[in-house]
Length: 324
Figure 1 (cartoon, one colour):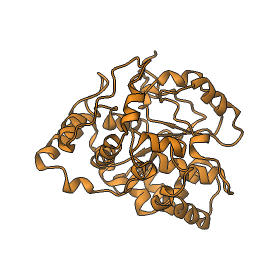
Figure 2 (spheres, rainbow, N blue to C red):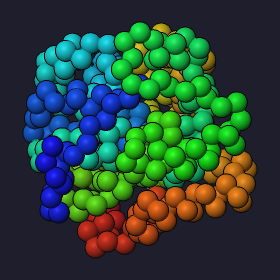
Figure 3 (cartoon, one colour):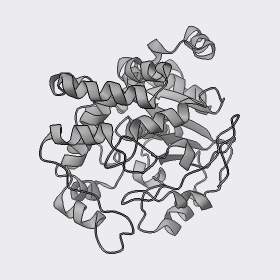
Figure 4 (cartoon, rainbow, N blue to C red):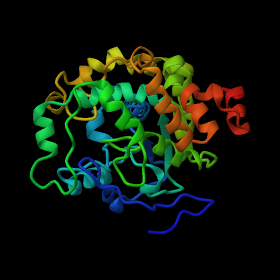
């Protein structure tokens, strides 16, 4: 693998675990206008996929997210079939990834939507996600053919998970994110190249505060015309209560969602709110967060993760906000 140049991203890591196989990207053939939605996890990935689903397919009935927007870096039952299906698509393609930038091929003709969230909110959503797995899903992930360390069982107490998640990496070059992957690490890898014209950051809190406005920003970035009325209609269609009732909204087919999480879509689309950590994490636990933040993030990146675009004062973004 080549070293990362100072002026452009380059792939320098291979990610393989009970959930990842970054080699699936080796045969990805980019097209001009492809969109990659990338998050660490539990930061609005599926929400953003559904926004793109409505932008790309303006008329009902729309294909299911799982049918048109694969997660390529996941351990796939049949990567050949997934890649062939993606190659056969003739509409604007939008693909999901949870890889940091050092594990993902970077193509200048592809547009990268980096969706982020306050790390403390990510943790609360991850706890719900991880503790909600069915026994059958854990057995499937850790079943025959696993070529990496198995997924450990979720601790029974959220306070037992927190110190490991915020202070221990699953990959040796990361220092937080156990047992999945680095959350802060993911954001930091993209933040370094935020000035590139084909990278756009989207913050979960901004999507909550002004869904039509953020949808308009996304539409503008990917080059799909969408007036205010259409953005408002999409915002209503992708509200969390609506997504919970839409069997085509999840990252897996509806029957698979029920097999993976105890309550299916209701577990996956849990609350969609921020700030629940304030009633859960203790002052001592928040001290661990502050240490990780200092260790892993530049101050401006940390401020953006906690406050969204309100904390982002770079001229290019300020100009975009002024014209929005």
